[in-house]
Image: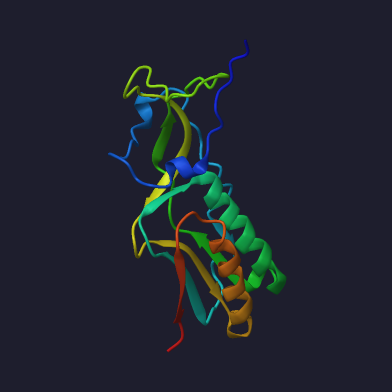
Length: 172
């Protein structure tokens, strides 16, 4: 008889349940965030427009989703050149996600409840966002506005929550 563990799904961690657990000094083996860089492009550039990807609902965004957002936005906006944009990830995944792995064997027709409310092992990190939280900021020149909108629209498809793009002018 082979024993197997069920697959961990990101949808299990989308809703915020309970208190955030961010005390990493008490968890041995807490994972590191998968986000490689938080700032990309030219931080000292003279830009006319700033775009923000803003959360429209409450939720948790896992660190691998944030890395996917960064890669998608950066890959799309890189067409304008490294000196013509500035991209910043504004949220940090503090919350440690834990999973109490249950056995999934053949003939398991009932839900397993062994060790109720067990602490679980750390499996990842997440950033908790509420409506109005800025997830990404992207600054560009006036000639690259359409590409910046497209980059944030593509990046928003990688997130488990609904978002909107806000645009503001930096020049007066």
